[in-house]
Length: 520
Length: 92
Image 1 (cartoon, chains in turn red, purple):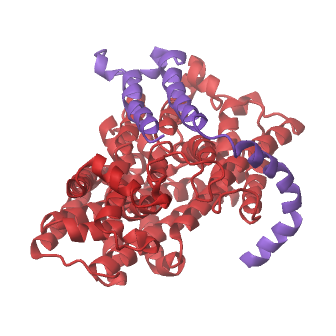
Image 2 (cartoon, each protein chain N blue to C red; image 1 turned 30 degrees about the vertical axis):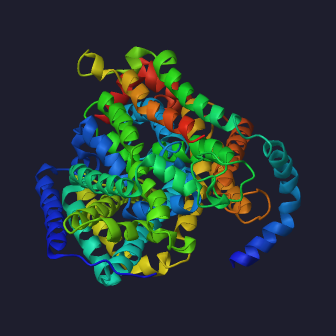
């Protein structure tokens, strides 16, 4: 079933007004950008609510609306684990362990911390891995939205749609930096919530309420009996067994994502106080727990409202619901919400990628060849230039990279390949003084290698798609390797460790004073 | 390329790794409800307890803008975790 949704003039007017408004707001924020700190960390002036809103909206893309609803249509509520188990505990952990720590050490990026704690090779390697991931996710976001949403659903030309999105978002990120990203995110979150909850309320109304939905789905047959069970057995062949959800997702992937993902961490580094940074994380976590209500539950409603939709076309659940339920005007608002989700994810990724490129890749390469460090002014210009180059490259390579059968599996596999090892060396680097540069390097490189081996050795786990187990076991493996290699190599000097391990950063007043002086 | 790498891994690593992971699978296969829900709830309550009881109040609320009850981040933690407790209990 391939039906194109028609938009009325009022829908097109709403979408156009929304996009022009976002662009204008983004340009307005340009007046607050005077130096590199303003561009990369918003001059350290962000309040908690803006941080919380921005974290959520940067994390939720337009494809989440489509793909999570599709996954819920196929697997039931267990697909929503990524926004529940995969968010709040990790965000609390990040708020009270990593955020204060990064805040006080004054680093701009996670690889920068790894560089100070271990060595420049670890910093460079980690930054390159993240740069590849951010580039891939940018390309995927652009192509999947253009192809699966705009072309398939609206009938718009995919390439034109892709460049429209890229240019609008690239322009305001290029000019306004993190301030523009965060304040457009605040507006985008409101639009997203209005559109998303509008669709949920109308879907539930049409089905006859929650109890009627539950009864009708369970009555559809034996294959739907687990659609209201959030934790599935360990031996399920699906991708979400409970052991994988608790250990692989809750402990490794979620904490690595919330504490090590530059897109998330950068917002908290721009906070005006440490309390705002922590509070922003908690607000973000609370708002994120609402996301499954608007992205997953419509997928369940579609089981009843679009019964003819084949399971292999589950990703069309939300577009079909929009076509069936939303009147003119609301349809425009819903598409504005989807564009909001896409644009905020793109802008967040662009800004973070440029921060990392300037700090960890270009900065390190210059120091290796003996060139002077980049000045504030150069960093600002280079950050803008990189933003422009990155969005153009992502636009050009979007189709060849993302035009594959299962984007979801591809992206999760890429993420699970290095999240475990990165978290292991990050945690040990912060909490264990004896961790050495060689331990960190071995933990990261051998850990990533072990991920590839687990991923490409079939038959080890019961799940057909074992990325959650790959993440967990690679984390354990990297912890062991880092500890063993560290114990076999010479300990780091006291001078190098001062102000870098958790105890001294959080508890020692002398270390905090020294850090403050250095950061100033 | 991917197929060749998979064949290589299957030949060289499967015999060793399956000896580690298959017994773990056998051990965990029969462990399901109520343990799955219990572990999830312990995870949520444990996080709340850690913030509210184990961490020092002065550390949790450092640079707090004022001393009103609603700026206490311990309360924010509980409020933002409770919906999750409800969800994992309801969808068990």
